[in-house]
Length: 124
Image (cartoon, rainbow, N blue to C red; front, side):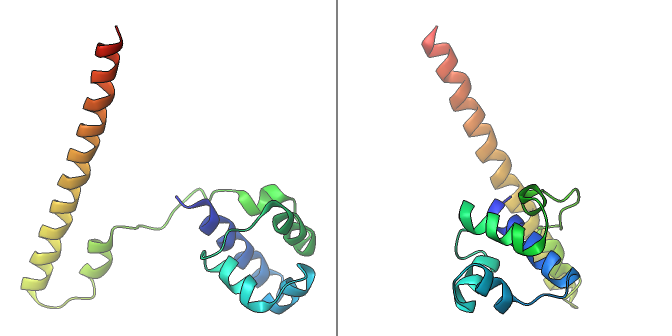
């Protein structure tokens, strides 16, 4: 999980809830709307000073901006597209792509674990 995106999503949710605009946040941070937009779309990191000023602007503690949501959106791309395709052939192709990506991730984890296990044998 990308913490920068998590913080940006928390800020966006609070801005919407409080009916505040990005331009007002930009003024509170002594910057411009383009910089705030980059911060809120995840293309620019939010530094600690900006985080504190944002928390003050929104009237919340910094912890509120950095909290990780209890539920996360499903990030399985193949499943996300499954409902958008109509042909059986496309659905089958997405299913195969999903299975292949799972195998790649599995083998990658096995390799990482094997490498770590070998290190402990070599060290003894």
